[in-house]
Length: 225
Image (cartoon, rainbow, N blue to C red; front, side, top):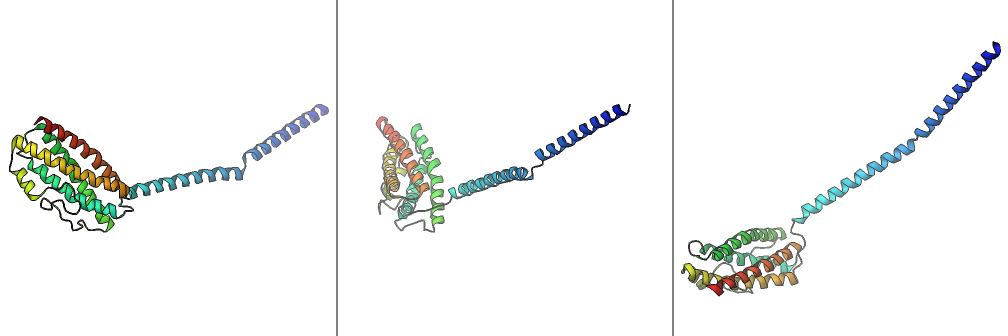
């Protein structure tokens, strides 16, 4: 009986030692403070990097609408294109109650829809650049084509357009707007070549593309009138 008791005691002692060793090994395997710190550090670093990237992206987006770097060609382009667009809008306004051809009316609406917002955009650029809206070359229907403002109508041209209606207006409007658009395209081509501001050059691209398309449409109108 004593022998059995001794063997039993030794057995439980061995089991207890084994369990203790297992607990110690388990603790050593999981209690790695440096590992936990490294993992946490990596997560924090990734979060900080993502936040910085998002901030930089937001900053870049905010600055995208700013005037940005520019040169004299950009300033001249805006200063000249504003009155040029203004006269195109004057011509378009004359179409109300005078134009007859549906395609002429469609082009009139296109001119109004595109050029009014572009005027506002260029005025904002000049203000941001600290430059005056006018370079002293005149504007409006009485300005003629002075100082390289190709395609500008004279006061006589505008009075002649206002004096006709129906097909006569459609024909005269098409003739004058072709010349006016050709002038705008020439000015935009100069900006594409000499300009430095990204937004101004992008607008010049739009002017060349859209007004060249309108010139082609106006020529087709003339061919059938």
